[in-house]
Image (cartoon, rainbow, N blue to C red):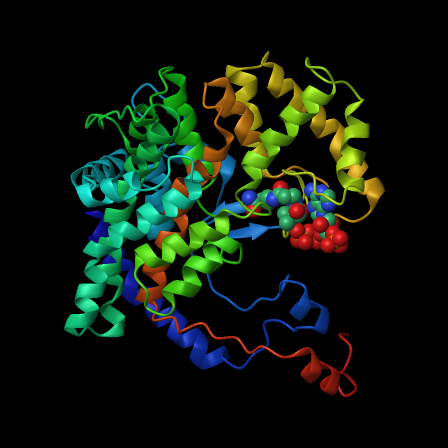
Length: 437
Ligand code: AMX
């Protein structure tokens, strides 16, 4: 069954289920909120819905119920490849079903058909300083695509809010089809004298992205397939997913919503941590005189902490164990680059950093997250322009947050509008508030 028909077959049952949950249980408490949570980034407050994935603090992410090892095993692979195809994870996130080989071929073909990036978008990027941070260029590139939004056209033509998922789906498919070209264009322009590489219509989405970036080693195509699967989604509350969802709740189209989400991903506490990790490791190497540093790393970690900075790539707002996305990348390294010097540094840091963070006693999770590992693999394949790493993350994250946007409109989710309070108001309330049991 074609992807869109499959999605259509899921809509009514899901809408009925949601409607009946709201009708029967709508006034039951999901969460209490205490004063410190209002000031503390709303950690742990259960107050939003995301269908595509769910994060367990101990186990890590599950995409539509499937863990990372299960996805790596069950999702279709490219001919001759062993890594899961990003088209497959998109199918899973969007429909809730594992795809067949034919399903992923259909998505590859659909994205190929929609992939031509209009000239004015490339010209718009050309007008930017090449040394403007790649995430800024990426966000602008996404916004420039907005001119062709079908969602806007249909909305202006008059459409029921329950039918908005359809033009949203169309925009999402076009946007995903074009993202690798925009990202690769920015990469080649910023770091390779603007020598652009034409897409190869025979390649799948991830491999074509690797090809357009110009990395020759064929293993890199496999890496990118894995990378684009691993970073795709992390439930609804993280900054990039929440921002995309929030902006979309105003019926802003997919281009506005994703661009906003990417601006959040560009923060160093979120996706930008991947570039910061590499910068930090290289500074460490320099400080320690090159080579694989030894336990002297401990001192360098303390210097960072005592300087009031965070150790990038460690800690997480929800996870309380080593991130399975870190583990999957570590397994890739053990297979393809076991003797790489930087991989050894990363492995040593895995021994050194957690006990230090525990000793410092602040971070609730001393274990590495996804960003602690991704950069060193890029360096191994010659992509050593750290500032570009968050764009790679962004291309992947689009798969999840855009699938979420289609479902937001399909379920008719409301404009997001929580209630804020002033400190003055909170002070006036606290005497009468009960402490959490
Ligand atoms: N190094 C030093 N201190 C850290 C730390 C780290 N890696 N992780 C957390 N802490 C500190 C916090 O800054 C906070 O200090 P404060 O009380 O002085 O404000 C304290 O420990 C408690 O924080 P927390 O509840 O454990 O984490 P959080 O939910 O507030 O923040 C995160 C989570 C990811 C922002 C934080 O762990 C961090 O800054 N890590 C480093 C940056 C990073 O790797 N970000 C990427 C995360 C994954 C992603 O989104 N891509």
